Length: 481
Image 1: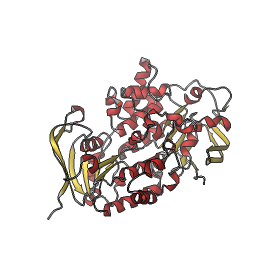
Image 2: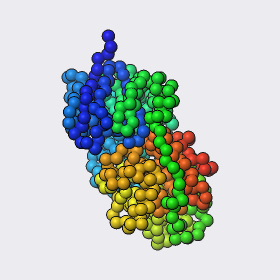
Image 3: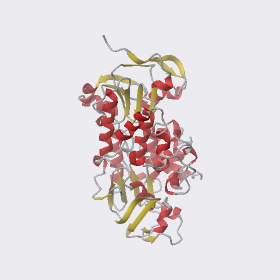
Image 4: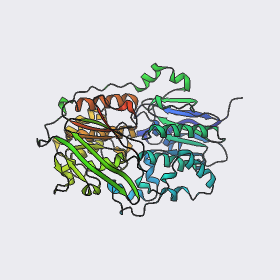
C-alpha cells in the first residue's frame, strides 16, 4: 500500500494574477518523501512555497493537510529574509552591526532559543548545528552563515510536520554545509518530520532528498525520483537554459574623476574587537591597482567586518591605520568620497532593501551609494541603469516592484547596482548568493570582462568554483579565539 499524502494541492490558482502559474497547481507529498523544488531564478519556486504556507489567498482549488494539525503547526518555512520576523530588527539599519552601543536592546541568540518548553530538543539542535559559541551574540551581529543556521534551528523548535528551507546552503562554509547535511539526515530519520528544499543548483541536492519537483517559467514541468533527475543532464540543461550576450562597451562610462593612485588599499596592524570578542588582530593587507583578490575564511572569521572598514561602514576605521586610493583615512574625507569609487554588494545589504519601489530605481541607487533611492536620478543615469539591467538579464523588470521579484532576481538587480557608476574597486561579498547555475556562469563572465584591465576586485565566497578566473591572489582569515 502506497504511503498516504500528508499534503495535497488540488487545482490551485492564487487570487493575485501576477503570481499565478500558467496552469492550476497540482502536487502531492506522501509520507516518507523529502522533496526538492528545483528551477532557475524567477521560475516560481518561492511563490509556490508561499502559496503552500498560506501567504497568498486562493482564487480556486484547495490545499489539504494532514488531519489534526493547524496550518501554522504543520508547516514551517525558512528563508534568509526571515530575519525580519525576529524582535524589532525592522527598525535597525544597515551599518548598525558595526556601531556597538547602538543596538536598541537587540536580543541575544540565547534569548530566542533557550526559553522553549522542550529544552532538551533545543539543546540537541544547538549541539547538532554547533552554534553554542553564538548564544551570547546579538542577533544583528551574526554573519550571514551564522544567521542561516540560527533561523533553521528556530524553525525546528516546534517540530513541524513539514519543514521548507529556501536555498539553505548559500552563505555556509564547507564545514557548515556538511553539518547541515548531517542534520537533515537526522531529521529525515525522525518520525513526523519531512523536508522540502528550494534549490537553484542541482549540485546542492543532498542524499536525504527522495523526489524532485522541476519548475520553469511559473509552470510545473515534471516530477522525478532523485537519481532519475540527477542522471539526466538534458533535463537539467533545459530547466536552466538562458543566454545573455555580454557586451560591456555600451555601458562602461568614462573613469570617475580621473584620479591617479597606485594602491587601492593599505591596511596596517588592523585590530577590531567588540566588547570581549576580537574579530581581527594584527592584520596587514595591501591591494594594488588592478589586482584581483579572493577573501576567504569560515563563517564568523571576520570577512564582512574587514569589508566594512574598506567600504566606510565601520566607525572603528578611524582607530586603525587605513589608506584607500592613496588617501589616508581620517584626513577629512567623507564616507561618500570613499564610496563613490567602490562598488559593493553583500548578503546583509540585500536584507535592508525592503522598499517596494521600481526595480530600475533600486539599480539607479548605486549612483548615490544609498540603501534605497533618496535622490532622483537624471535621464542619462536611468538609461545607464536600464542598460546594466539588460546586461544582467533583468531588463524586462524595469518597472516591476522590487519586493515582488524573486530573491534571485533581486540579487541580479543589486549586482547591476554595483556597476552603474563604473567603480575602480569591486567588493563582492557572496555575489552569487541564490543565483541558479547558468546565471552564476553569466555573472562570472561579466566580472571577468569588467575587471580584465586595471579594475581591482575583492571577491568573497565559500565556493572555490565560484571564484572568477582572473583572481590570482588570496587572503584567508582565521576565526579569532
